[in-house]
Length: 328
Ligand SMILES: *[C@@H]1O[C@H](CO)[C@@H](O)[C@H](O)[C@H]1NC(C)=O
Ligand SMILES: *[C@@H]1O[C@H](CO)[C@@H](O)[C@H](O)[C@H]1NC(C)=O
Image (cartoon, rainbow, N blue to C red; front, top):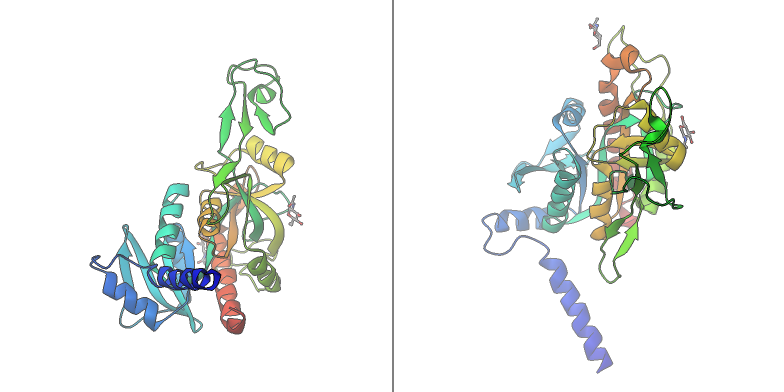
């Protein structure tokens, strides 16, 4: 009885695994089957918007599949091909968390994906980092998940931002009162729903990424436009994601001081969240395009180095995973 039960479970698992593709009546069912059977498992390379695609296209590293170079699903173009001989499907999600999550879910449910590599640009809240640096956070928080409290509500021990503390020129009280940062629900198979604040990237992929500490990053756009210092890859960070284009020095300082957050973007936590929900490894590389309240004017023309350098590190990581084939 026990053996038969286990056998049934194994058979069901195999069936489920094979059917993680489009329904049989979907017009692209056969194409997707072919892509999954003739290549892969693929690395899902995820980026948010066209400026982040520019370095990928300029690098010439992506070689499209000759038979099925791309297919469109949920309005996104899934590009099938190879980077340095490694099977890759890359896709632009569109900006902000909902677009990122929809696209990663679609990618993971349709194709045979062994993991997600996410790269792009970010604002920086850590004054020890500069434009062109690439941050590799080990975890991300959704920093626009709030409880907004009413005026005069009781003190708690949660992490809170008091608007009155930012009154200018003098601090005081304020009818907007304060916001309390809240965890987000995470659903995964075989586990009860959890509420977590920090969404971790995959520990194994993160450790592999630390081998890329010395990747040579680009310092100059042309002969005259150069960063004052050689840009660097920075590990050990915490990142933040919100549906907010954050360019406010006071809030940047708050994120750094309260949460030790170094980067601010609009997709990463959602990409990590979708990967965790599906039990697929994920790693994130975010290039600094501006430092909130700092360097903005002086280095404005150099911010495209953020996308260039984050792609450089992501491409090296894809290559690294390709070399480690045996362990996956
Ligand atoms: C800020 O960035 C520097 C690298 O420039 C890093 O060493 C430091 O750990 C970062 N701070 C935090 C709190 O992560
Ligand atoms: C170099 O790049 C900067 C920033 O994009 C630009 O303003 C400048 O005109 C460029 N110089 C040359 C010589 O191409």
